[in-house]
Length: 174
Image 1: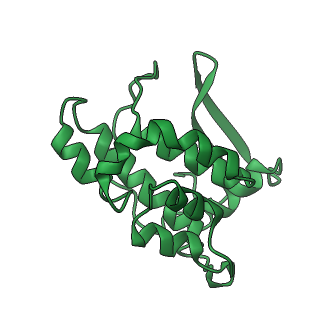
Image 2: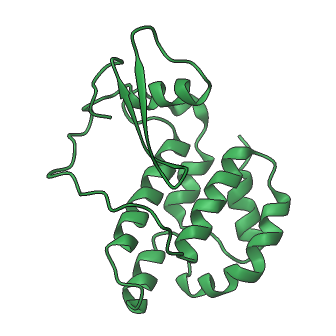
């Protein structure tokens, strides 16, 4: 299978991703399992973990930020070059999934304060596998399909969706 276009474009711009993310993005779709998803899904989980770690830091914690960004880029020092190089990377991308990931990576490299409401943390992390079909359900929802008896609730703030919850479709804790 050909290497993932985002990985190639970022490497070509001198912003290579870590080996872990490269391996995940390049994984062949046939290796997808119901429990762990596909490589793309795993890559989004890694980005979510990085997002959460960075969110716990004050904006002034540059040393800690660099350490966390080393989970994203092979050389976290290249993050400073992203401002000038990411627009050229964007021009090379064709897939919407790549553009979405690029926007996410850009938001990690260049944090901006957004006027979103504070959402209290869950008292504990949900158990792994608490809803093994959540990914499938959310993909169906994204494609405009809601299963019979299902309900989707959106929480909005300032006209932007903040949370999405599915009910009546498998476990309701997703």
